[in-house]
Structures are given as structure tokens and as C-alpha cells.
Amino acid sequence: MRAMVLVEPNKPLELMQVAIPTPNADQLLIKVEACAVCRTDLHILDNELKQPKLPLILGHQVVGTIMGTDERVGVPWLAKSCGHCSYCLAGSENLCDDGLYMGYQINGGYAEYCVAYKDYIVHIPEDYSSIHAAPLLCGGLIGYRTLRLAGDAKKLGFYGFGAAAHILTQVAAFQGKEVYAFTRDGDTETQNFAKSLGAVWAGGSSEMPPEPLDAALIFAPAGELVPQALRVIKKGGSVVCAGIHMSDIPSFSYDLLYGERIIRSVTNLTREDAQEFFQLLSQAKINTVVTTYPLEEANQALKDLKTGKLTGSAVLKI
Ligand SMILES: [Zn+2]
Ligand SMILES: [Zn+2]
Image 1 (tube, rainbow, N blue to C red):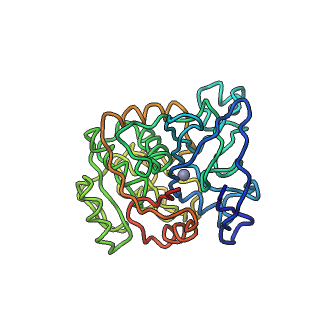
Image 2 (image 1 turned 45 degrees about the vertical axis):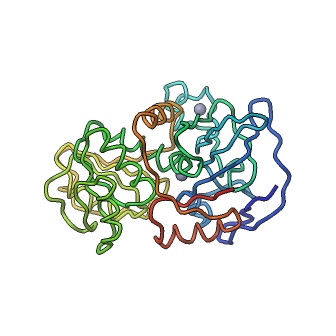
């Protein structure tokens, strides 16, 4: 099969012919139709996430069919959890001590085929095409966990308006919440995009919203947004950081945190999150905005994501 392979970090992926993987008794062979590109893929490529399996096929937002059937499934970031560590037993398999992650410790979906653990795949609602469903598997799904961790906050600030935020704006609007979108200063194109998806306000990340917010969700990997976000939330509100990697958070006055404000991160996902989110997707039709690339142009897709050239999500069409 054809695959885009990470041979070593900080080098472009290489198009290679490799053997079709053989599933073990707990796995299924998936014929990949689409794989969305995630910022985490960039963090692995740029050596910001340590110890990936090498050589590695990236990709953890996979939509494809189970070989020998026409059943369409999604393969998200959590490939497998151990099932017996203290976290797994407490229902927090996202924190598993021995979790395996798709496109990181096992080969992912930047390829014509991949294997996936049976108990961790997701069923894709029929009215979503494979290309449009792929970004829901991480941007959507881990974004949904981020939204959930903001509790019952009604007025939400979103910092970094890319793949996750463009999905979550629609989810939040469906839930009757208000989204205030913060983009790079002066990026009126993205601000208009946010409003077109249902954001009630959009501005630059150094701006103050018209009124204090209940929570802020940070999707961009920029640590300097943490004190910015603390400035816009009310007492008792949370700043929830959605990314797997962030640049250092600058020091800031304790006054910004005082008032029982909370800063927390989001780590991975659980199968329960996936079940809940995909159930919601069959009630709320979410329109993902995608730019497609052929498999062999994965490097270009990653580059466009890095330079902020994209609107919505990049998706490899296999
Ligand atoms: Zn575990
Ligand atoms: Zn991801």
C-alpha cells in the first residue's frame, strides 16, 4: 500500500510502498477513505512530542470501511487503553498509564490501510461524508471534551479559530451557548468565518469582549493566551487548554487567577466522550469546512496548517 511515512522528526514525510498491516485478534483492518490532519501531527513532526514510534505513519482522524464489509467507521486518537490501571478503573481512560495512540505509538491513517482496535472505533452517522466526518474525530471529539470540561458555562471565549473551534462553535450554538471568537489580531477573514458559523462576537486575541465570559477555551498552542484568557473570564470561571502541547505560559499577576478562577488542561479522550459526541452529531448536523489534499500532498497540508493558511480542516482524501 502507499503510505506517507515519518522516518525521522524535522524531515518531510516520505511517500513509500509498505506492506498492508495484519490485524491481531483484537483489531480490524480498515480501508482508509479520509484522514484529517491535526495540529498534534505537526507537534510529532516537529519533535515537540517525544518518543513517537519510528518509522511512523501519522494520522488519528481516520474514516474508512472495515475490510470485507461496507461498514464505515472512525478511528480516533485513543487507540487502546490498558483497562486495569487506577485511571482506567476510575473511568478516566484518557489518563491511562499505558494508553496507545493512533498515529503516534501505532501507525495511523496517512495510508491506504490501517489497523484499529475493535473496541475503540466509532460508528459514523450516515449523513456525514467520509471527508466531512474525518475532522470530527479529533478536532470535534477532543474539542467536545474541552467544551464539557467548561461545565455549564454559557458565554464561551474560543482562542484560536481553526479545525476544533469551527466545529465547536456549531455544537455550542446547538446547545444554546454563546461563542466569542478570538483570532490573531487583524484576521478579519477568520473573524467573519467565526460569525458565519454562529459566533455572537469575534475579535483579536488582545481585545476584550463586550462583557465578561463564563469560560475560555484555548485551541491555539500559544502559552501567552492563558493570561489573556484569564482577563476575560468572570470570577469562578475556567480557562480550558485543549492542546497536547503549548509554548511556555508567561508569568502573570496572581490577581488574574484570584477570584477562584481555574486553569486546566484536556488530555486525550474516553470512549464515553466519543459515544456522547457522535450521538449529539446525529441530532445536530455539523458542517465541517474542509480543504482536501491527495495522500502524497500530506506535507503541503501540514505546511498550510502550520502557516495558518487554512480555513477549517485539512483532510487527506485517500
Ligand atoms: Zn489504563
Ligand atoms: Zn488530534
